[in-house]
Image 1 (cartoon, rainbow, N blue to C red):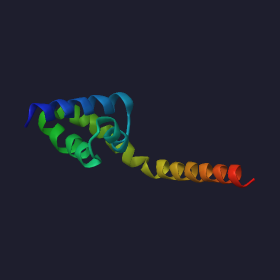
Image 2: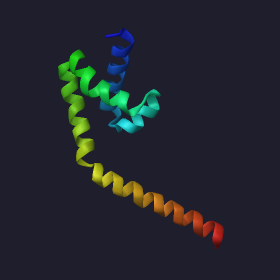
Image 3: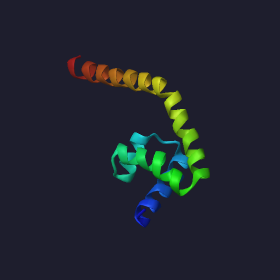
Length: 91
């Protein structure tokens, strides 16, 4: 595996453990696709450092467990924002 990829995987791992960010948010920070982040943290990290992989896996599992809550909250915020925009421009 390329040393640049290994460095990126380790940086992503440290970042997710420090910030608890989602894969989608990390993709924006690291300027790579969500698929790349996913592959880095699920496949490549396992080959590089199994102990670190197990820590990251817990964070990722938490994100899966609360995904339905976050999705609902994001949708709620979206429509509140649209409603505010509508009231501001129409009224």
